[in-house]
Image (cartoon, rainbow, N blue to C red; front, side):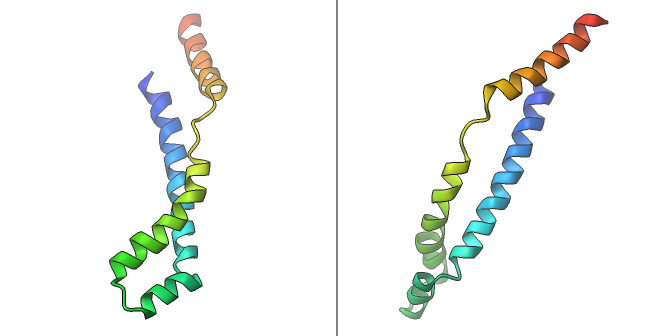
Length: 85
């Protein structure tokens, strides 16, 4: 029972982290980030306040829970295999 959960979780985590990285890189080239850098803010503050704050919005939209139907169908198939033997 642990393996199906791990597979589905890691797959979703990998896709979500790639999307988050792309979103942060896209926002770091925006005008408001360049303006913050030109005002003399430190790089850490620019990335955390301006980059991450605006990048997290689409990531939260994608981080919805996995539909239970897909997970339960996978578990039902695994259970049927064990029951038939």
